[in-house]
Amino acid sequence: MGGDYEPYEWQVGDPADWGDSVGVPDIPYMGYIDGDDDGDDWEPPRNSRNAYVQELVDRALNLKDQRRHWEAVAVINMAIEESPNDFNLYNIRAIIWEDKGEFEHALKDYNRSLAMFNSQVVKNNKARLLWMMSNDEKFYTKNYTKALEYINEALKLTADEDDRKKFLRSKGEILDLMERWKEAYICYLLAADLYDKVERVEEQEKQLKNTTDTLICIAGTRFYHDHRPLNDGETVDLIRESDNEHDSDAIRVEIEGKTAGYVANSSNTLIREAKSASEIRDIIKENQKAKIMFTYIDRYVIAKLI
Image 1 (cartoon, rainbow, N blue to C red):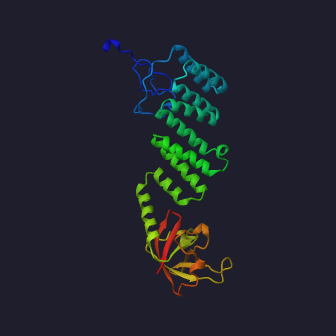
Image 2: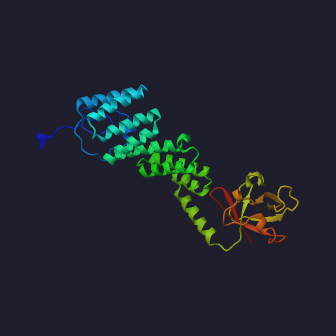
Image 3: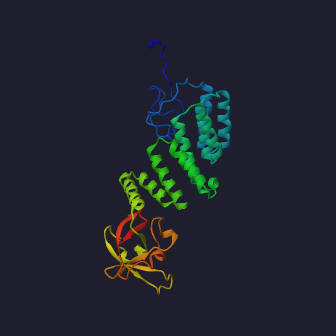
């Protein structure tokens, strides 16, 4: 059997550590193609491309590097005509399209390649393309739902940990634009591997859902109290401010006689489980106090009436 062994020769687009020592470059060739692969992704066995197809591939990639994209596409098309069942040729053409900024053409070719073989290398490349599309207004035209679809698919496809974190940060930014604050916050935590904080948010949500206490949000804390954050367990005083020229339902929050903020009274400073200043104005006592429970998703200071 040893006499029948034919060494596999490295080809453009293969991970750098494939093949035998002969023909494998000293450094990864076009790491963008191999997706920073560590050699763990199994690929189907392939016979070496014939010399003509390999020459076309080399020429197309050289033209791409010179920014002569249309010529590169024409040359890789010749390679595809010669070897139409080589999934990696479609992957390479997609990379040329992508480098030219023709993202829709690139997406079609990544899909063609994956329809021929479910390569993780190609999936990683497609995921990066979808990430770029999710950040390009030309493709989502401020339709953030579409951008979210792109980034969600990218997250499903990628096996690259650095890309996953980058995609999660982008997803958080999109969700921020959609004013889906909690989901955005969770994405940022996951991107930073702060799983303990994700668990803390889940615990806080259970408290919010199950409590029978009257809850309030305290807004404007960064403008008062010498910019010191309110700590969990602190007790604050609630004082009606009927003569407030901006809001006659205003309720001032004080600590030791100093203003620490105001009870939230607008939809963008409240969570669903909390009461607004207008809702509690007529039920609070003259010496009403509240106890700080926690700060929710680094955005809402939650307190309960006591």
